[in-house]
Image (cartoon, rainbow, N blue to C red):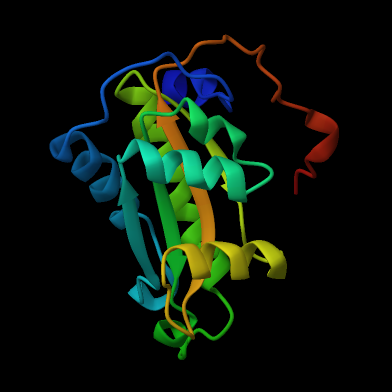
Length: 167
């Protein structure tokens, strides 16, 4: 697992290729649904996208998701805040964990990916909600672009012991 974590990068250019298969998308979505959530509320839904015209529309609509123009697929994580009434307010952490699982699974499968935030930017929430007819009370949390990487960004994360307090 450490190798997958160390190899994960935010990919913004993808090679042309066939859309991901339903089996590949399901593998990514299973990883998402295995993420921890507050009181096991699982306050999420997912929109799996492989249609080229929809990926292009996302790239045109979301200013930070231009890489969808070359991606082979995308997954929109949709938050369900009402599902998390008992642990009120924890849906961002839950959806963040599901998103990270997708990113790591994509890396393990040999794909590149990029997390493009939607929530909490109200303008982006409204744009993506309208585009995908996401009903009131549900919140598009992020768009994850997926495909074969056409770039090799340098590693940006690193261990910094000054950020740790040992007790």
